[in-house]
Structure formats: C-alpha cells, structure tokens
Image (cartoon, rainbow, N blue to C red; front, side, top):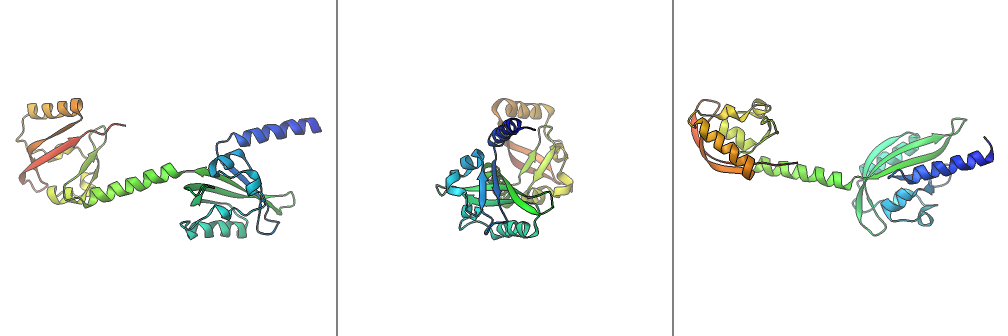
Length: 232
C-alpha cells in the first residue's frame, strides 16, 4: 500500500470513527497515568470537552461526587489486568451535568503482544437509566398500594399483579401470571354487561364500576373496578 492509499484509508477511518454516534477515546498505558492521546467528535459531543482540553489527561476527570466507586474499581482492575470490561458509570459533562456512561474498555496489543493502548467506547444511556429507575419506582408504588392491581398485555393475559391483589383474590403471583382475568368471573354478570364494559374501554380508554367477582376459594365478593387502557 503506497502513501496515498494509506492517507485515503486513514481519512476514511477517521470519518467513520467520527460518525459512529458514540464517544471513542484512546489512551496510552505506557505513559504515566495512562493519559488520553485521542478522542473523536462523538466524545466531544457527549461530554462538551474539546480535544485540547482532554489530550494528556486521565479520563477520571469525568468522574464526580456521585460516581459509584464499584464502577471505578472495575475500570482500574481491567487496566491493571490488561483486560476488557463493560461498565455503566455516572460521569459529568464539562457544564457539570451528570450523565450515565456505558463504557466498553478494551486493551490493544502490538505485534509482540505488548500492551500498546486502551480504547474506550462510550455511549450516553441516561434516558434508559431514567426509564429503568421510573419503572422500579412504579413497581414499588404498585406493590405497596392498598388497592389490588392487575396488568395485562394486549392479549388480555395477566403479566403483573401486586400483593393486594393476591390478598383480595387468593391467587398468588405465580397462579395469576399468563392467566385471563376471566378466572375471577363470578357468573353474576351477563354477557351484555361485559360487552358494554369492553366497548367502553375500546372507545373511552377506561371503564369503572361495581361488579361481582369470585375468589380462588369460590367466595363471591363485590368489587369496585377501574380499567384503564395503556397504548404504546
């Protein structure tokens, strides 16, 4: 390969790295404190730092007061052991804004098998982490409410019930999952009643009212029921 071909290949590689949509960092573990020697535009967009503010520094400058030390230690261990690691770690942008960083760290070795560089691929997963935290919070709220809660999928199969539901109906979590709510039917409502109920849900997105249901032990009890449809 001649110098012109190498130049073209290098330019194409640089363009590809800059357009990956993720942050790319290259550090040199042969130098003291494993300093950064290269970042791409994705890293600049991710953190707000420019290359001249990063080159020569260790990436720990992205860490802050709330950064969990477990993730930091995992990175340190990978560097010491010259191995790869995947970690989700709370980092901070130049403006002080925290963000969740999904980091994949990989060692690069030379032809003699000696460690030459570490490459870090970084991705902002803040929205995903926030969604996970919200889901956990919602589940805690559902599990701790005094009202029985049942969630079904679009095929009307039960996917989640809370503890109050099991106390009211007598059905455990395992007994309810993947079942149809018809298992609670007491037989006291007419077919027309249920047809009207589901018609209201389809048109209005919800239904509420009183009906008779049946517990696992066969006992029939009155219930106030609120059904809400959740669309994607």
